[in-house]
Image (cartoon, rainbow, N blue to C red; front, side, top):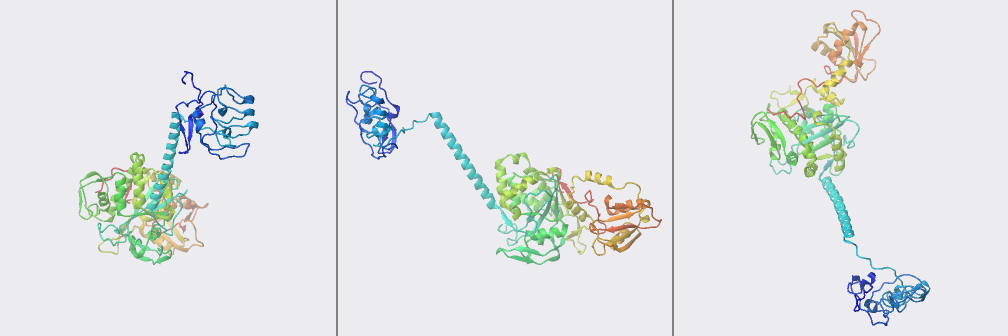
Length: 613
């Protein structure tokens, strides 16, 4: 209110005053002082005189002087729309003739419009340059809050993206890769997947804690992990480290990019397929292929630290002992019963062998299978999968612990593979040990050799994607397809064996086996077949069906191999058995077995009742 008590009319825009010293607008709430009545406010004050040609544009300048002091005394409007004396605003803040603004205080000609619609000269804004821009009003508290919220969220999103990228880079940098020159499918595929898991006994970098620190490491623990085409089941085959086998030539990538061929060896321990003479995991993959007939697609290799770190990352792994164990070699000391082990204790558990079973590597394999089964259950448990902290710790630990082939050598590829394999239910994962017998060439048995009857059957099941956990259902379907009816006695079976397999001596070996092992004394060697066959066949007459059933049962022939003629044969006529490329050796079933060989060591991954003895 002024001194007469009348309300003073203040333009809100005029409360924002430009300060030329700071270069910014300031809010001035005190009412401006009035000049003497009847004296118009003077124009210019302190104005920057950046001029724009007549007719448009804006000038930038400050306000001061008379403008800052308020409005003039004049209170009316001038002709043609300007404001004149007696009006509400003085000429300096009013409108000039023809719609312009007069020179003077509140808005001068430079900031208003002059005669003819152009901008005139004077004070409010720079001469000959117009500007309709008014200082922006302050935003409400609500709007400011929204702006701050949006800005904060933006920062969080950007920070999260940077964090994820940094984490990705960190995990990616953890992984060591080797080009094995074999396998290396894409991370995911539509067919079966075979992953060779190698645990090396390298002590390098461990400062002699577990023995010779110069030990480059051999294939101490090797598991061929086969995942079925439909991802419904998996079989994990443990390969004993002391099995005697042949190691093929191994092309090995060198640090300078060249390739070195490490010569083949015959009749040596399997574990020397890694480390010996500079052999890399690719050599172990080739050795597994030669031994089993199964080609690994990928490999994953880990050392002692992996067991310690991974068991710790998942919060410990539950194991079971059927007796007290005090092993001075592995330093494992546990009472009978169930325990949760992690770190050094977990490593001691998987290394123990002298205090369980027969005290050898085969007994240790059973411990390792129990440990891995339990770790799988722990990793797939809700407690682990729903904990970001545990998952992050597990991911960081796993990537640090692993060396993998280039086909899965990134976090993205490993994630794709893990997601693909996670479809397998734990209850359908079976651990089994490759069937072996004591090495007959040794008086004191320290090594083993393949069981040539059982091992090929097991390998055949893996090659043909037959699960060890679903054998009953598959067995019923297969048996239903075979010929039903009576079977002749072995002595009444007459058969001539032809060799169309391409395997030298296959016909004679089969005859020897039939006569000596199965009692088929009326079997003969017919020599080579006219041509090699892909599949073995048995041709017989209708009146020889009982003989055919007996021979099919002995040799494991599928129903598709039986070819029945239309006319009966003479009483002493032979059936004709032609061996095809599906023949491996005498005594090994021609068809893929529908059940695991009797007596092989195996355990289901979801079996919590297994206890080491």
